[in-house]
Amino acid sequence: MDMTSSQTNAARQHPHIPLDELRAQVAACRQCPLCEGRTQTVFGVGNPEARVLIVGEAPGKNEDLQGEPFVGAAGKYLNELLAIAGLARDEVFIANVLKCRPPSNRDPRPEEIQACTPFLREQTRTIDPEFIVTLGNFATKFILKTDVGITRLHGTLQRAGRFKVFPIFHPAAALYDGKKREALENDFATLGELLSAPDGRAATASSSS
Ligand code: URA
Image (cartoon, rainbow, N blue to C red; front, side, top):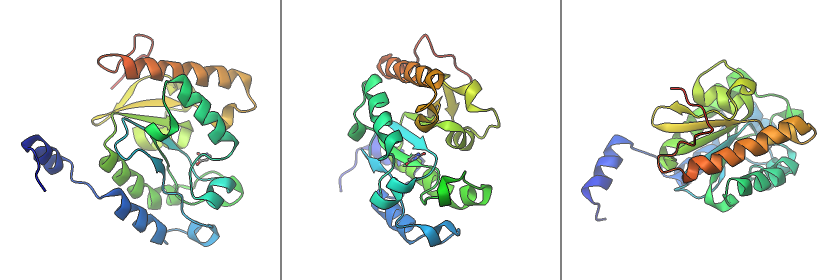
């Protein structure tokens, strides 16, 4: 295959595993006990060259049954939120911190996050997005390596290595909480501004490194 020198340099700087290979690794994973209860793994879905990677927490019941992230009520709402930012669902890539459903939708455990996140790390390298939108505390704490909670961080532009990171409340948390709903919708509007700003930095979003 013919490669331009800039493509060759990029491949050298950021070697990556093809998404199909990663998907097969995830499907075969038995690194933690969550594999016992799953119907199937939920690898992620969307544009493999997305500018925006959305990271949620873990599959729920519907996601476990269908093998796709964010297909339940929170997923329907996520689609509406993406539209506020001017994004279509198939334009972004959507993945989770965990690829298997925790029983009764309980919180992910530290050992599960440790076992599963090498997959998310490789997905991020391969997709190489400009923005990572972290939904809720688990995704935000993992991507930013921070203990600062989502209530303080949401709606502020952050950085993790070469990635711009934009933390937002989890859509499920806002389904029955009007205040969070307003914050979520404002944050997705800000994301839209960030995406259309020439340098990816909207005046309304504060930034830290
Ligand atoms: N919540 C998540 O964090 N991820 C999903 O895929 C569905 C609900």
